[in-house]
Length: 387
Image (cartoon, rainbow, N blue to C red):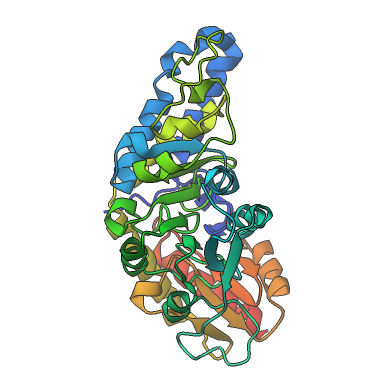
């Protein structure tokens, strides 16, 4: 049984929030944990730190449990772009090497790879595919196809960099299939998990994924400016440091020891002072929510809520892009007959929080919403779109 209470999810008091693919409200334990750390700093600065010295090891352990991996494979990062830059800039590319990605990736998973063109690396971009054949001539991102990916990979392909879930269409990659393909060809699969971690199961070792980077303020309901990076030991062994500071070195607090001695585990990428209140907040929400419920159960509840919403949505007013289960995600996308931005703004003033991207309205409920809330959201959209 899920906790869906207002006390645990305070945003329920003020709005009906269906935008977890954007910037989510802080879950209560995340807020309290961050506040506790900040109060200790306000009261004593350095003298208030000792009770919090285990924050980062706890974070490594909790995220490792969430991702079904060892704590040593986890790094705290501030956002997905930082993680991708650390990996892309440090990867041992040679002129003529190739990276395969998708033409409509989120910028955090595009520009770090595009930057490698200055090193003589070729960025190969997959085009759009319409696996359902339902969009016709609608000029909107749809998703990429495995068939095209297979045709674009060459012996010079070193990295495939894709999102688990595409932020516009909600198209989810089949990571099991994709990971097996990469493993057979010795290609490093690097995944942007910002739109899946906290909503869908994401187990990199099971799927043969070399790295996962995700922000903490979307489906994880943590603080803005926090994130997590998973790297396999094999990938860490390849990637050179491009950002360095005292804390990626094994001598740590011995600041006058300038021996080049970086950590071999995930601390290799934690190069300097972190936002400890953000680490505390993520620890709080991981313990109270995402390590309390299985990701399989969370995914099932999100899909059930989406299905309930669709039973009450007037589909004469909206076209629904609903992928088969292996490509389905927490983002349900709608095409309206009117102006999406205006519709989203109107329902927002009535307390229904949605987002629009490209041609789509994105419906992104989390597991803690109720059946009545999903029914009310559909009815409000019907009324505003039909009026």
